[in-house]
Length: 219
Image (cartoon, rainbow, N blue to C red; front, top):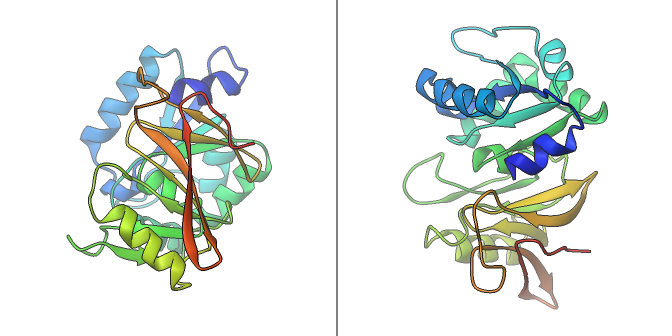
């Protein structure tokens, strides 16, 4: 998914901005990501909120080709982004054609909401995400036993949107505008039996899942 995003910038040396708010701007996570993106031939910078914003958020984010958001606490991420105006800067970047992506909390944040462990070991809903993508989002769909049934329950009860997109670990969904298109992965995956992505819908009161393997399309 990362390679797909970098290729889609159409730049020889894409300008990548790393945002690890959800992990408290952990220097270890920044160091690992810097090494990976530098090795991929990118010009790398970051936007931190700890101990205070490291740059003007709109200038830094809108000046990037790709913004990559790491995992961690999506609830903390959303609170701090709104406190410092990062939410508005992210929307400005998106509207200007900057590619936005990420993993776990860095996936949930772009949607309306989903399931999160931000509040403890028992998963709970988050319903106040940025909503650039007008759907619920299910992350770690195959890796954590609570994820799938809770997403279904929250959708059926109306807490979350009646349409969601979910991903198993190692798999991502490429969106063009707000349309879910291609299922991608940076790891070798069997499209028939391996990790996949899912369109999850409420149809006549029941949950209906449509599985799409890596390389497939939701169109």
